[in-house]
Image (cartoon, rainbow, N blue to C red):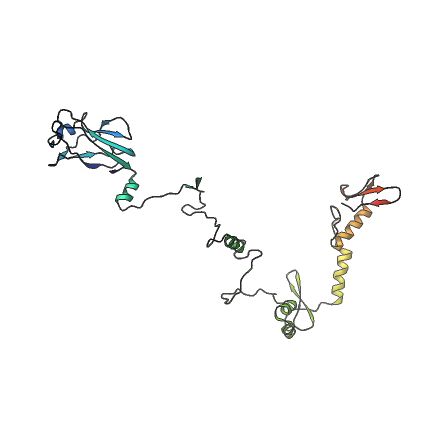
Length: 313
């Protein structure tokens, strides 16, 4: 029988039988049962028998030798087994009954209207991770519809800002709703030709080359009837080229020259080699930057017939 922890309860304890006949019912043992030191004894979880705490409640009995015995909240305060025992050798045979004391919420779930509490503390022997928000489980999805790659694809699609994942492939779209506004300066002649064909591009754009200034950026486009556009003259192009060659300055390159690089960097290495310090030993030719720090070198070799400079590194 199950008892609710730390809850007062009334037991139907018995039957009490005469010690001589073993079958005759014993009644009228109330004073003995309720005795403060020798009455009902309790053993909690196999512990020593001690007098019950609720020893002052007058027990009653029925015609079948069963006594209504009250246990207090103290008597039922320990989880586990509880033995209730009475021995009165002068009158009746020993009487005992074993109970199991359950947590209140478990007892209420089994015999009341409460739900069984099943807090998760471990998963496959590992402590459950503390969630970022109490009450919400942090979940890492490994499979969708028993398909592992589907979870990986979903992660790739939704990583980034909003739906702006990198390298996503969107399947065929049949219906578009709530499209965002088209950004300004979005259409260009090249874009129109590429997306709609040269026939539509020719119909929309004129052959005259136009320039649209957007902030500090210059966007080349072909257009007719667009206000605020000006022709890009030969003098303007020439001025920009002269400015890049004769006015703009460039920092000296660092490291060793690459096999493929932009023209400005390649010219920079030539100027660096002509201007800055160079040291040559019997085996190494070293090139330095303006601060005197070695940046790259060549291995030198001479077999008596051919003098060789290796590729710079």
